[in-house]
Image 1 (cartoon, rainbow, N blue to C red):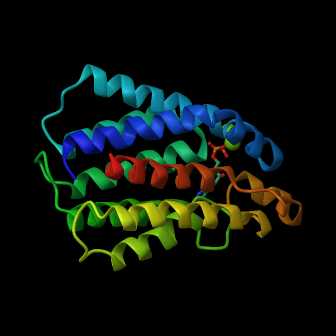
Image 2 (tube, rainbow, N blue to C red):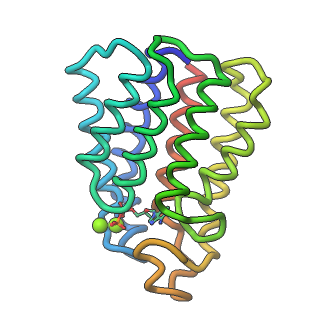
Image 3 (cartoon, helix red, strand yellow):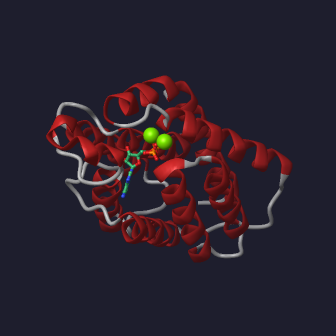
Length: 208
Ligand code: ADP
Ligand code: MG
Ligand code: MG
């Protein structure tokens, strides 16, 4: 993964979130406070602006820019989680323009671990972790496969969509939706949808 692809990934994610912001708000309206699409769209718009205004020297610097921007602009539970996760991600990326696929997976591992630590959510709690945790297992298993394996990331994006859809049947145990208890059943978790869109952006980037 090089810096060009890394920025492409975030620009693509920003596009996908923008296209889906109303869907995400509607999902959040059912079990939260109807702002997840607006939160993510605002933050990712700022990430694109920050990229346009900065030609950072390295992947580490780019990822730090993403983390700081998300932290200060997304707001809500998702802002704190995505922001702190990406800051952690940046500490694992090298001060270089390119990282091997295995190094990229290590950084994602650090991202997911930071999310787990901060949010305390496990698989089955009906959050974004229902996508990130199994995705990480799948990616770790692929670590020996050559970088840019389109097959792996395209399959992963499909699985991520499935894991997100499966949150429909779960009772929320973290975040605002947890206040609803059993009444959260029957609605897909919005944060799991945006997490799945991130893997879609990764697949689209590798495919290009
Ligand atoms: P808020 O709930 O503060 O309005 P958002 O609507 O932007 O924030 O984000 C809600 C999403 O954040 C949820 O759909 C869920 O996926 C995720 N989330 C909430 N709490 C946690 C947590 N403790 N751990 C992981 N993810 C969480
Ligand atoms: Mg919300
Ligand atoms: Mg909110």
